[in-house]
Image (tube, rainbow, N blue to C red; front, side, top):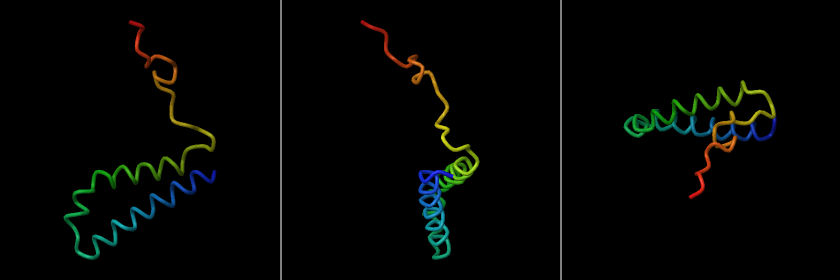
Length: 72
């Protein structure tokens, strides 16, 4: 696992831990407001752990030059 992935996973786990502590302290409303972000957090952790090293995000139209505006 690359060092970039390790840092990413550490930061994401820290945020998840913070959310758990907030729930334990009774700040359920704060966690409920952040629930969609926490779902994305879990998805990103899984993706970071399962992606092969050296792979970037999938190339989209902008990467292929298709995202440029036509000349005026």
